[in-house]
Image (cartoon, rainbow, N blue to C red):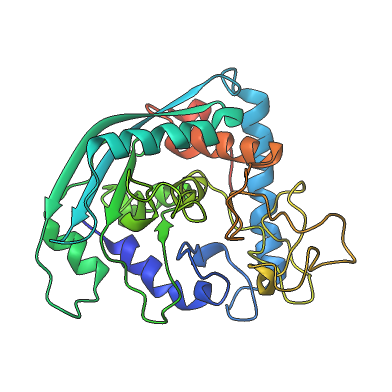
Length: 308
C-alpha cells in the first residue's frame, strides 16, 4: 500500500495550515497565494480549464443528473483508549452524510468495515507511520470512497486538525495510479457517538467537508489573496472570502467590495457552526462533473472531457 500522496499532503500542510485550522487538504499543483510559487494568472488558467471540463461533462453526459451511488469502505485505526467506533455509530454517520448530500443526488453505501487496534508509544506523532503499520489496505478502484478514521492525526502546530482528503484529478497521476493513497482521513473524535451526540455538533460535518474535497471542491477562500483578489474556488455562487476570515473574525463580509456575504453556511467553510450547512448548485455541478471525469467506474475515453 503506497502513501506517497499522503506524504505530499502532509508536506503541503505548511501552505494550507495558515488558511485552515481544521483541514490539511491542499492541492499544491493548483494553489496560489503569497505563500506559493504559483501566480494568480496560473491559477485562473487552471480553474478556467476545469470550468470548461465541467461544461463539457454537463452537455455530453446523458447521465449527468442521475443518482451517483458511491461504495464506501471504512477503516478504523484505534489505540487502546481512543478512536473506537462501533458499527451502529458508523452506520448512523453515513446516514448523516447521505442527508448532507441529498440535494446533490449523491448516495453513499457502506460496503465494508475494517478495524484495528494498535499500541502507540507515548508522544507518538506520526500519522503516516500509524497508517502504514496498521496493515489496513485501501479497497476498490477510484470510484470507491475509502474513509480512514484515525485515533490520532499529526498536528505539530496545535491547530486542532480534524482531517484531509485526496483530490480527484490525482487519479490521473502515475505516482498514485495504484490508488493506494486515495481517500479521506478523519479524526475519530469528530464522529458523534451515543455518548457525545451533542458534544460534536460543530465538528460532525468534517467527513462531509472532506468528501467535498474528494469530489473536487476547494475551500471558498482558496486562491484568494488578503486583498480579495484571485480566482477563489472557481465557483461563482460561493461569494469571495479571505482566508483571514475562516472563523468569521472579520465579520459577515470579509470582501465587502465584491458581491455576497461570506458563505459561512457552506460545508466547505469552517465556522464552528452547528446549524444547517449546504452545498451551492455550482458546487454540486462541480462535484458531479469531477465524479464523471475522474472517478466513475469503467470510465472510457468517450466520457472524458479535455482538461488541458
